[in-house]
View (cartoon, rainbow, N blue to C red):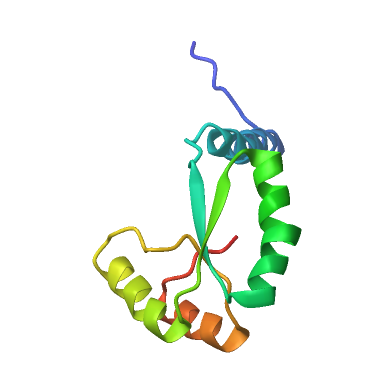
Length: 117
């Protein structure tokens, strides 16, 4: 006589929830294993704004991570088409972070060239 294995629905759901939770927790660990860049390139405005960004954001970031921050002060109307073309062609954009206004960021997001943080 063959015994039937009966798995109650609740036990099945508990098991699959546990597996899903383990899978979700493993993602951040794999992200930690990724190669770290030597530098990141941030497009921003220059002048006093660039100086404040370096002092308040870039220098503390470099001190904490060891990753250098290089600024690109190219005008937005010049860099945007270069970013869009690189993404359309599957290339790495000329900058990693575009410090931008809400309007310009929305335009880029609608084009599909942004990455959620």
